[in-house]
Image (cartoon, rainbow, N blue to C red; front, side, top):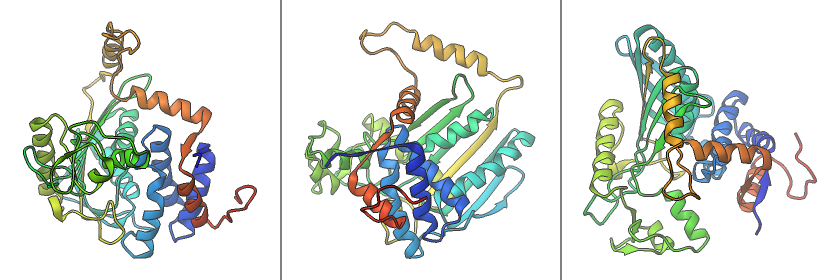
Length: 345
């Protein structure tokens, strides 16, 4: 089947409607939906609207709370402890970021330690938001065990992404990377297309190297960069757990299923830039990097975040593709009949 080509407005309105029909407040529904749609615009479908039906199922089972913004408590002057109360990940995260961003303007640095909150989506979007305000953000999160240790045969640690946002122009510098070679979403995408994986990306359920995406879905993803990526991944896992009291390794649940409470952890650190700011110098440096002579003339040098911004601009103009079955399910959850000529706003 041919994928639907959706506009940002249509995708947002129908998705917000789907969430509000299942008890989510209008404000919370828009915060969550904007996170999914922004992922779609940037070509990150694994963090996009395919997650909406699962969130609705989690809402129906009481695994996600439709209204909570989390309970926040300061531990000292700069450390915010957050119990997400099973709230929607972006809703809880942005409420915490608002608090620590304001506090960092007074103290120079503030951090939020979040537990008991649902899936965050793309960390890049949090980094971009804070950096656009003139502050620096470092964000860390954990996930279900999807990655095998270096030299191991089975999944023992999460993809454990890290994001950094720094003020710059014409848009902030944003780095967002998982510590796995690829995402599980990409494995599923290759399986759906019956495409072979690149050698070294994954193991099957028995711990054997495989290029079969279907076999890899039941196996484990490799850490990026071999031992170095593994070391970073496990370092982030224990760091986040120690700060948030979140679960570790194979005990982590709830971002990929609709059966368990989400028990991963999230850490956000907001810092004030140096007095006077460095955005001008940083922007000039990034432009100099982009101007570096490329090894392949057909592939100019870019810096992290450039491709996502280019894809976003294209998607805003042309729309973005969404699998027909995913869009049909979202419309169904929004109460729109399959034969409706146009969305009922």
